Length: 221
Image 1 (tube, rainbow, N blue to C red):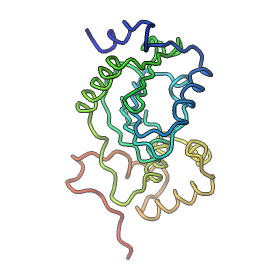
Image 2: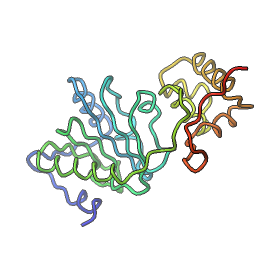
Image 3: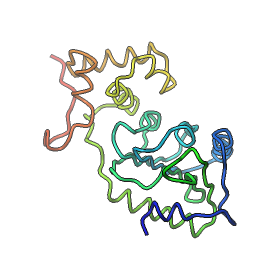
Image 4: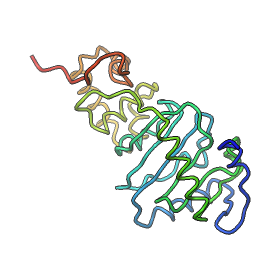
């Protein structure tokens, strides 16, 4: 049975509770992360929609692994927070695993708007963690970033590559537009970029075939 088919076979029962509606899902997630947590495992297929499991509060100081189907799917807030992230083209469903004890995943992987399962039954949680770890092991790390880029700078450049304006980047990362404008100008100066577009081309997801050593910022004359 495929991972997707297995997830679709889940039924309500002890330790498997359905939640319906974006407000209920976000409220429950906020309740879960209000308690001190240590780890969050996130999986986002390219086909997923954002409303239910896409715009959720990002808990501070929580180790996060982010598994996505493409670089453009990465949640920039998580990148800015220093999340580990990898890419695997085909993923079974959107999923969040908290402390390997609670799993939230769509009732129907092909239609995330139907609702979300909250899973606490330990045999199921263990099986889902094992599935996540297997997929993480198969996934590729995105291209290496130039040495010296901070997590915030990586997030800014990621959003620039998606065509976001300074204002949109600021809103996504919870920073002021002035801070973003300054960051972009500083990066353009450091890497000799002629434009924002050129900066994104220089820095976003360079692959190992492009160079044998990590990029570094050009030294000042």
